[in-house]
Image (cartoon, rainbow, N blue to C red):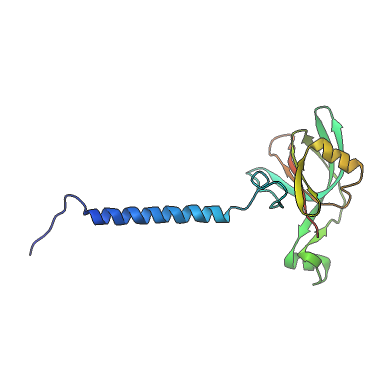
Amino acid sequence: MSVRSFTKPPLLIIAAVAAVAIVAAAVLVAAATLSAAPTASSAQPGSLLTLPRATQAGQQTVFGRIVSLDRRAGHFSMRFDPALWLTGYTAQRAKGSTDVPNDYFILDETHTTLSYVVPRKADVTVLTKGTHTTTISVSRLALRVHRGWTRGQGFWLLTGSRYPSSALSIDEQYQP
């Protein structure tokens, strides 16, 4: 009975291991690319955003309607009426009917307004010509609010985690 001892691994085994590693890396890169949903920063101009935006630890996303947006010293002050954007079974139960057009229902029972600080440089995305999106300044959004163009429209508000919990972004939600 003879025992073979290899001091160097055979070249064929090294090539096979390298090939498996390359294929595994390619599969991981492809999976990450396919599963990445467009965000506000990566979406093409005019494309519909994936809302609400992803949040980091400590940040918060709130859906609701903008009641007012006024200029203050160095920033804007927004009054915001939060609501719940419901879909599926939850929307059916909240509405009290299985007939939920477009599979969403907005629940706003209190009409309580909350105040938020909005920096002049906050990201704002609004809908134009149906589902096309465009980025505008906070001052342009304030003008739209004052003219009543946003009445009835829902927005996603992303707030920061540090005092005064300023609005980081405001994105208009498409509502068929």
